[in-house]
Image (cartoon, rainbow, N blue to C red; front, side, top):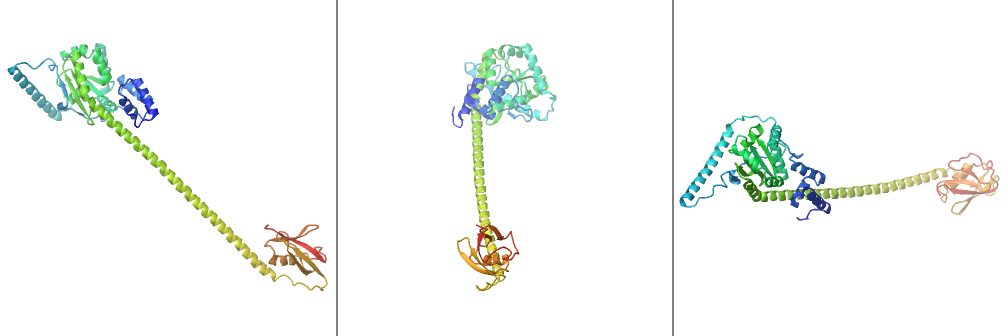
Length: 438
């Protein structure tokens, strides 16, 4: 089997499934696991259910697949097929040819007539409990014939759905106790260990009695004319069709040969269906992976774009904040400049050096520069502060202090209305100008 498309873990599950179920074809194992979403436990349980004749959890009675009943597409075997060999001689061959042509024409015409009559025939029996009809027949059959293939314990519709889903052959057997050949067929042919083993290995086996409403309905759907009758249903060209028809009694060897012929000639269609289903599954898986990869890539691109947009917005906010701070700072400086201009007019004039009652104050600026200015002792400390505040070399926000003992004479938070004399300043003082923004 091609390992393409399978991971090591999936390959290990395929081998485990094959060991549990004993299915030889590893492609079938992969197909079953794929349909069960690679759930090994569920896949194994479903196979065990089918082998024991229990319907799968997916089997349903609603909308069973349509079964095509075309004798041209069927292997048709009757009780006389194996016993009547072509006679020798020209007359015998001519008679044999005429009989076969007549039989073929008769069967074809009768099938068409039966199909036409079924269009106008009302159902004589209403199927109310098809599952009970099947289970009742199975119990009755087991009591009379202990050796038998594994019966499918479900309705005909469920069997069709399971056969289609699992891509297995469905062997339908309709029982009729009113036919003398039935007992011999069930006791000798259908009970053969080789036949039983072959059916259990290759097919689902569904059976019912035609006296029950379910069996009667199925007998009409397959156009049964003689009993016992078996039909093999399988998938071909994406449709469920009757692939083989076995009418009447035959020995076990002949029954096994007929079943093998039908299976051998039609296994290629099931294999093709499995391959098509697997290809569709792989295509869907690949498409899903591509969609997931696209979604991941799209989300990554969207996330990248989102982060890029956020970074851009953060940068714009940062630049805007800087600009606002610059404008605020510039506005503050402009306000201070206007305030200095306004306050400069309030600074009293400097007295002359020979004026009595004056004090010489040396302002020591943060830059190290010294400014000397005379004031009358009656001038206020506010006048001293306004002078140095309005000076071009002075910082924008200042306080004036003495050095020893250190005390704040005037600042934004500590204003004073004392005069120079009341503040204790002498004839000559040094006042420190401190930058509050430093």
